[in-house]
Image (cartoon, rainbow, N blue to C red; front, side):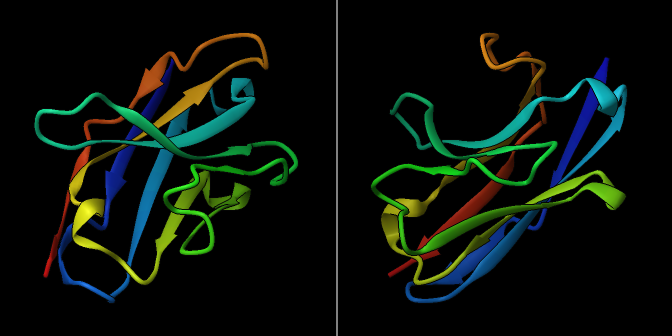
Length: 120
């Protein structure tokens, strides 16, 4: 089992920045990749960014955040981060981190989520 705990959410003005953290514990050696997802009220959950846990590379970004958000990880701290810059009101959502164990498996470990609100 892998446990994930997010932190760093909050209220920020449009144009501002926030950094989310997701600390992993448990069988972290089994993690293949990690990702950040978000869900806004009344909308489906969507992928934001992903990263290969072992290499720290192979990053992916949704078009809506490309150039503004950066995903990176510190494997010594078992933590993945999402640096969010130039934030927009449409970035408002609950953000979740998730982990998967292989490149052909789904994300089967999820954090509890952290609220991010961007005011205009």
